[in-house]
Image 1 (cartoon, rainbow, N blue to C red):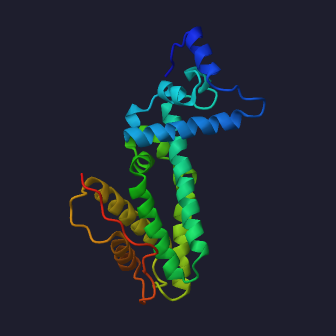
Image 2: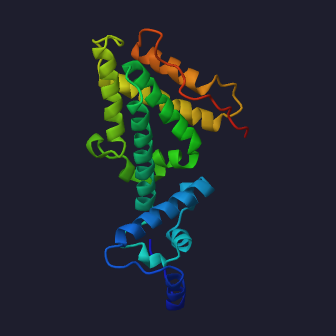
Image 3: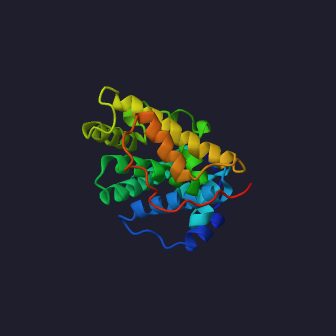
Length: 231
């Protein structure tokens, strides 16, 4: 999509923002993505995101976005990719503090669900069907591939430690776990008045059951659960 921006509007918007010096284009791109993330969090609806709205938030003309993003779809995907990277960083930080493979697996899954519930608008973007084929990459190009492969590795380490049956395919188990995580987040976001059990307990039980996790050492919540907010 394109916008007609008159020269007076263009000058007014550019005057509100210090022009980037040579080599600062990456910073402008980051500002654009950050502004889009703010607007998406405020509206909760990816369909309301517009390049004009993002440009106004940053303090630039809408035409200044095109060198970085050709349309709203690509900008929304950039927001989704950024939040996925933040999720993976959060999971990695948790993993660094643990040594038991079962604890690592369950802590990563709890972190995934908490991230989705704490960032509902951005989580929805990660799975927003109306973004079209751009977010339905083949597995090799999928934005969430790295996180999924770490999940597969976490399950494999549990198998190597004798905590998960070794004859089960870790990729298939990871697919089941991801499906459960997404279901937990999606349902808790849309059915807030349902009498849900504590989040950590639900995640621990679901993941342990799906992968056949043995022993009782795993599954202790790493932080107290927070009650769901009413509709």
